[in-house]
Figure 1 (cartoon, rainbow, N blue to C red):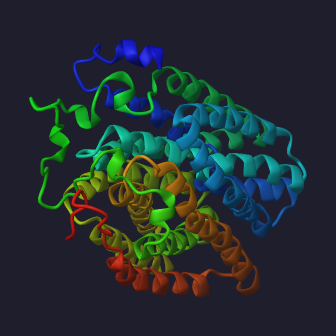
Figure 2 (cartoon, rainbow, N blue to C red):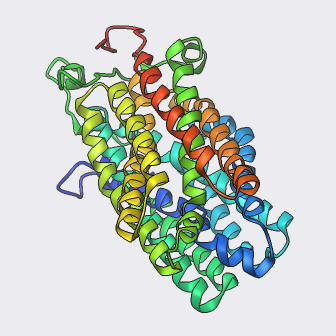
Figure 3 (cartoon, one colour):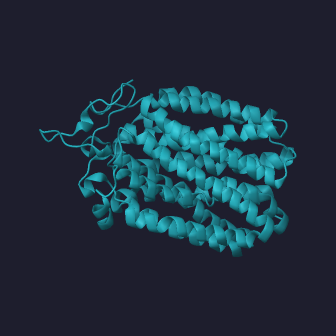
Length: 433
């Protein structure tokens, strides 16, 4: 905090962007145990240890189940102690967990270490970073959160390619050690030294606004006919108020279904591409392409959420998810597989940016950690049940046709249901569409 106060006027732009950049390193590091990293390692792990795909993919579900218990606690801790200490402790735990995987040669030890990483992936990294960005930005909230997940997508590319290249040449043990050391090197110092919890803590206002002559903030002015104008802390929702709205529970259910589909495809995508004839390097390139598209898409979806009713953006995401899953079932040839991976990246970016902006826009800043902590339960249930369900059906049928068909239907239905998630008016600071 002291360093942030000293640096606030050093840069020729708003210090909030420095906070966003520093918070982004946590989301970058979060990608170490990402599903696409695991996806390129499923094949060599299965060969080295003799573990089934269902067993390995079950670690993703195990991490999601563990996160169910930690998510509300992490949300409470962010609001109570601040996002910065929570994020610093989290990336320390993440780095050590990744290094310890080098010696995880039994399923139980692998599950424990990987689950620790997935708890950080699910809870403190995304909730902490997006909460900080939401407190520093209001008019440009979508863009700020988009930048954070842009850096996260770059992390997805780096860790996926790194895992693929190292495991082919040096084996699993070296792969996990290098991944863990990279986490610690990239994320700890920027988060500890540069993040301030909110602009008011160092004498600034959200978006770099200045006070009017009468002492009021320009934040109360309309910023865009299609954007929400949210008030400051006294106009925010408490967790108790949020959970009594139908909109909150629609968002929870949408989080469940979105990630039930998306995580399942992500975990099994690498193995699926190998099944249809791609080699390990080409598979890694296809998965990396999805992260490149996700990086660009994060900024694009950020601009969309700053300018359009956000529930419409959410609906569009589900339409793309349904179409891309259907296309994945019919894909043929290397070019087609790369296109399928790109469409997966479009959905990846939307699934990160849209809910983060939506929670902040609808419920405000002051209790956002607690609200996100509870709201993420839907996401975690989807991530816990989806991959293991897909793995079981693959084991029974030898293909993914049935579960992919279910995914298409679910996404189509959700594209309609999410339109009911209108902002619930608490006061005049929240506008109806």
